[in-house]
Image 1: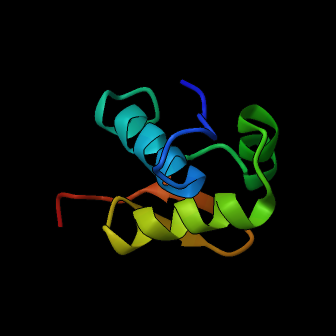
Image 2 (image 1 turned 120 degrees about the vertical axis):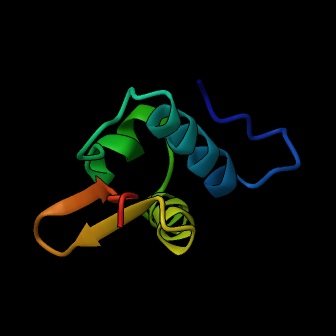
Length: 77
């Protein structure tokens, strides 16, 4: 999946949707790629990647531990 800059949906929302789908489909089961990796893979700025991760955190899909990374949230709780 790629980010379509011509689409009306902002890039950070597109990235959040891509990551959400990968988590739902089991492609990402524990740790998400680093912010730097996401920047390089999708051609986005750091602020855009961080906004996408913030959306997923607000939804309870992921949790971030500073210095350790962002992980798929434990939904069994």
